Each structure stands twice: as C-alpha cells, then as structure tokens.
Length: 260
Ligand SMILES: [Mg+2]
Image (cartoon, rainbow, N blue to C red; front, top):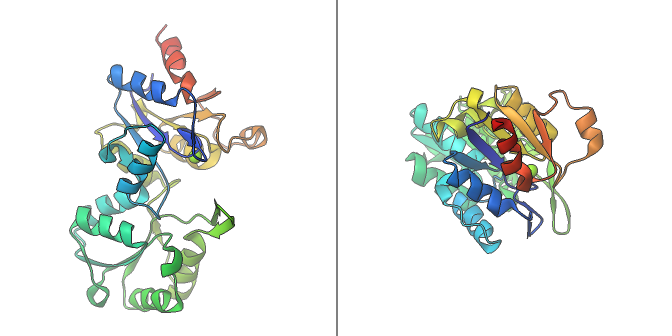
C-alpha cells in the first residue's frame, strides 16, 4: 500500500487547458488521509511559480513547494555538491528560480557547471558556443531534461534534448540529466517530502518515462488512461504498471480497495 505519491501534471491533472474531472477531489482525498505528495513536471521553460499560477487558473490551488521540476532537482544537485557558479542556459524565469533557491551565481567566467534546459529563443550560436567553451575548460554539463520535442500551439517545438546532444558531441562529455526518467529525479522528489521509494507510488500517463522510470528505482507505478495514454504502448511496456486506472479520479477507490 503506497503511502507517498508523485503525481504527474500534464495528462493526469489536466489535458490541454482542461482539468481532468475528479482530479481535485482525488487530491483532496490524499490530503484528508494524510498522504504526502508532490506534483512532478518535466517542464524546463517555466518556474514553479508560473506552474502554480497555471494550475490556479484551472481551479487547482497547489502551493509552489508541492511542485517538483527538473529545475528544483538541479537546485538540490547544485546545493549538495556546493557549486558556486554556473552558466545557466535556460529561460530567464528558470535561471532566476535556480539562482534564488540554490544561492549560486550565474557567472560564465568562473562557471563550474553548465546548466541547460529548454531555453527557447535563448538558444543562439553565441550562447551554445559559450557553453561549449566552458565544457572544454572543464565545466560539467547538467541537463534539466533531454526530451526531443514537444507539441506547441502551432506545431512541434524543439525541446532541450537536441541542444544537449550538440554540446555532448562537441564537448566530448555526457550530460547529467536532472528530469524524468532519470532515477535521481524521482529520488530527489521523494526526498523533498522525506519519503522512501518502497512506500511510494508514481501516478502518470506515460508508461515509459513516468511508470518505467519510477518503477526502475523502486516505486510502484500507477498508470492513468488520460492524457497521452495509448493501449499499444502499454502492451509494449518494459515495466508493466502496478495498477492501471481510468483516471486520477479513481485513485481514492483504488486505495480503499487495497486496504480491504
Ligand atoms: Mg504526463
């Protein structure tokens, strides 16, 4: 019986701009039952503040501290490893969030670490070349995520992955990945609420990055059939989920059935 929960946002709490019916009540159930939980998102363009605001506009009142993103994982990593300065190749709001929470300075001249996320228009020849030169001088490469692409409002958009791959190729070193499906991401999200993998579950709509990623580091995996769920990908899953639910709304009934 899982005690603590990691809950994916996109496709689980909402699809597009529409909240999943019953999702709010399911979260309220977890609160009422005293289950600790975190919302996890692989977004690297937006700060937790912006993510919380978007959730509020859909009727979910979720405090920023309950949201865990690759930038939050990077803050843990930079703090634990006592990094002082970094080159932050991210959007402005994510750079501000990392600086405020980790205490590092964005200072290319002394950077020990290059942090790269989906920086959108900040990916230029100049900014990528600056990162490349720092790698040659010995800086480590920390990737917030390495997704290939995402669906924007007017078509497919390059995510951070292709740029991470370019820097790895030129710099001759592999990136340390902060976001899903990296095991460190799930473990850091659990650590942020003092939970252990053996008594935690990840709830997601992606059988590979959410379920496979979490189950490979000891969590149970609850797949929901909303968002990007497809029967074909479930049939091919390397880690069959611990449970498959029609939607997050079915979580309270599922947890009650485990207690019987
Ligand atoms: Mg999702």
